[in-house]
Amino acid sequence: MSKKNIKKVVLAYSGGLDTSAIIPWLKENYDCEVIAFAADVGQGDEELQGLREKAIKTGASECYIVDLKEEFVSDYIYPTITTGAVYEGQYLLGTSMARPIIAKAQVEIARKVGADALCHGCTGKGNDQVRFEGTFAALAPELTVIAPWREWDMVSREDLLAYLAERDIKTTASATKIYSRDANAWHISHEGGELEDPWCEPSKEVWTMTVSPEDAPNTPERVEVSFEQGRMVKVNGEALSPYQCLVKLNELAGAHGVGRIDIVENRLVGMKSRGCYETPGGTVMLTAYKALESLVLDKAALKYREQIGLEFSHVMYDGRWFTPLSDALLAGAASFAEQVTGDIVVKLYKGQATVTQRRSPNSLYSEDFATFGADDVYDQSHAEGFIRLYSLSSRISALNKKGVPFKNTGIE
Image (cartoon, rainbow, N blue to C red):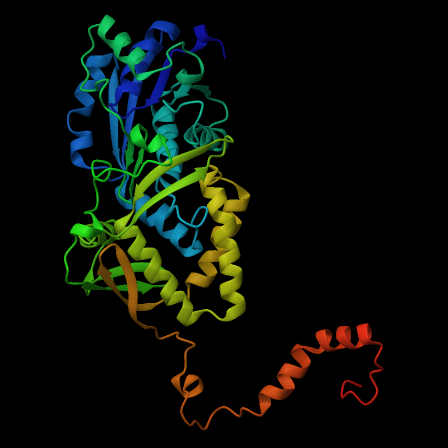
């Protein structure tokens, strides 16, 4: 669709510097009506306060703010937990998980207002452009997508500030801000500033969601969490909604410095990036979930679930939530999650979340079988036949190499 045919655009709006500049830029370059859309995914009330008024003053005709907190945790975070997905062994996918629900809600607003196009403020260097546009392609392929960072000639924060100043548009952003942050109920990410040098240790100013482990209490705190068929339903015996479970765990774990990571990751677009992530409640959730899995899944089932988790970490990171592969992996994880019911106690201490107690009505653990003491249920002599059969191919291979006939070896 040509620029002259675009009359109404829905912009994914945060109120930050980029999207504040995008509103007037769209009006000037596309001569269109701009409708701002903001998703409340638990980033905090301070991020949303005055957002509608700011969007209108910047040139938007309207600003929709949609509360997605419970849906985000229930329908995106919890299913991802059941897969065990962790990207490149460390990243708990906080930004990745939020993008499909935000983009889906943006499409719904576009349909509601009869928009011709969708717009986002993602840069051409990052993963989020793929996540947003992958969702747009799956849910609204007929709508035009506008990505200003791939069109305009502005290349820096200073350029955007100058652009807004020329138009007398007020902004709270400044050239001295050094970190790029993205927050939601699950986590907060930090990039930029000193973090662009992987040899530079993050300063205390980087972290905002957790206390420093060195400054955390000297006394550990134990928290008990309860799951029913793979979904957390209680914290310390109190029944809570999915979102409130996460809020509670963020508070408890954050106070003990739990959930910090500092990684260099492989972006989908080919470059490496260094980021610091804080996921206090999520770290406890995933740690507890995997501990409960260890009780209820047998060896083969757990191995396959681990394979699902590895594959799904890339599906989620790469923005492929709305795909047949994602559906299949989530369905597989959900079938295993049906057995994940029980209680876990996690000790929070100096940045660590350590499982200390576990129980489940579906537990496959039996003290009668596992004991190192005397028992009446396990005949250890049975292990000999099992081992001979289990290692049969190795024995045959070794005899072949030595040219020894099978006769009189006990194999025939």
